[in-house]
Image (cartoon, rainbow, N blue to C red; front, side, top):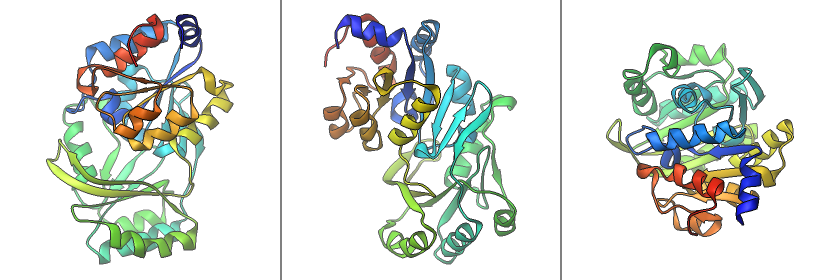
Length: 297
């Protein structure tokens, strides 16, 4: 993009940030330089959105720090308006389906984590529940993640609406995915994300996990829907990411930035690759590139 086109973009509309590996450093903090660059963008009239597999309930602290305007959560199945504190779209999972998957997890010693629009629950203090618990110890009260330990999760499921299911194991999940697909097909559910050998620094564990939702939405499709709601065309949206689950955003939106720590495929398909990684304010570099016309592909 030439300088004039970059400035035209910045004077307009929406910057969209992936969280892990992009906005956050590996220690789950946001650099001062990233925060300053986001603030400058907002002063130029730009709205800021998060695009993530996470839910609203576990991003409140991050959202507050960057003065976020919108969220594309659960890989596009939940759209949230921070300005008016309301959901713009939310995909729900049938109670019978949640109960059947819960039963499968218990029979096969798998950790199950359930998301709702405004909170997350599990019946074990492990993996994601433990991660949020540990992070909450350093967050102020009003910004703690709404993540709870539930004693009787089966009864809880019967009385609450679930938006996403996360299944975690330290072992390979391939065989379980084959078995679970019978349940998913029965209820028209989808595996919306599958991560293997992910090291979680906070809990010092390497885990495998799948996320299950009631729609085949992605970050890209969710962001397109958000753009339509806000009357922002795709060419006026700037997306940031680092991983293969960000690739569809890079392909869908002509203005895209991949972190230096991104996957090879993500780098190839983005318009701009930062020289700095997520631990060294790569987001700030990308924003400055589009504002000032500097940087190299």
